[in-house]
Image (cartoon, rainbow, N blue to C red):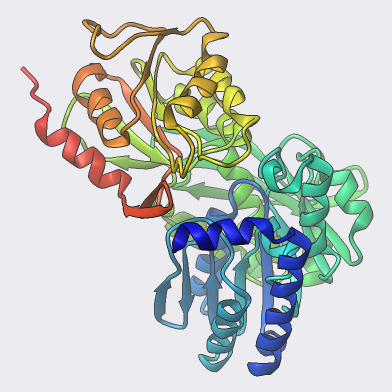
Length: 464
């Protein structure tokens, strides 16, 4: 029956399906009486970093004593209640969105942070949501199986900022100029490399934390906040041209330069919501990474294991250089690519992995109805251009740099990396699934936990 339903769905044009979602969204707004009008709704969109940024904004507001709710692709937090929203990354159905927004309003929330995907914007799933502020993390080539090309993808993201009075945009991202020209309201920029309203300087990457100084225009901040001398004393003042800037020290448990951008996006957001410097600094320092994001798994051995959700070429380009920099021995990368999704990214991911990893283990990552061996072969084609050579598990004798293994079963792949490949000071980096709780094989979802898979693999490893 499920196969038949999926087949029938595939025969319906996307425009007609989008119209269906629009009707559902209109009905849901009417049924719940436009609940988003009772809240300050902040939409967060982007290819990578959405979930971390959503959770960070939520945490900053929560620790500052604000009444806030959250709806992400992973969960909803309404008041003190937490709801899990399913297995895979997708913005919920319009009825679910409006239901949770209504619950947030009834719970007395002032703010709602809504993780907003390009699919949700394109398919009218968030139609009727009264977005007051929009935040962009980045835009890289992803979901092109759906959007067909980068321009369509960018235009889908741009729909969020045509609805908001304030847009928080990434000045370092190639999409910045285009989006800035299309924004209807005001723009507040953030960045590391390019000049921006909110910037990170004096960046120091340490083993367990990241430190930097955040700077922003004094006139910009004082125009939006009622800060007193007590608030200003935490920072330093300096002049750049004719403008005065404020500088504050930031310490974070989030690792990597890509996470600095997520932190800056969150800071830019809450600066406009009148949080004080002390509230921002303390909130960032106390924030712990979401599950499945640069998550270390305790091994009790002389090597390390880290889990992350990175599953796009753009994410690989940001994450892998950092992971390599903290690896004392060899970097062993275990990953795959989703079936029936953006076929063009597969060899790119293989090539990027080959630039930084010492050994690569390719495996399943939600193959759906595709042949996992074909998916791995397409990824491997990119890795082989980077001088990696495929070695069969049956012929394996000794782990050496430049080896490439294709192991269809993800549990087997993780066990092979942990039990056969890992040596002293190595780091096994397992990417693609992160927080997800299921694996899609064929037309069915099966329970899956990346962390449990690692723990199981560690049980049977024998160290002499």
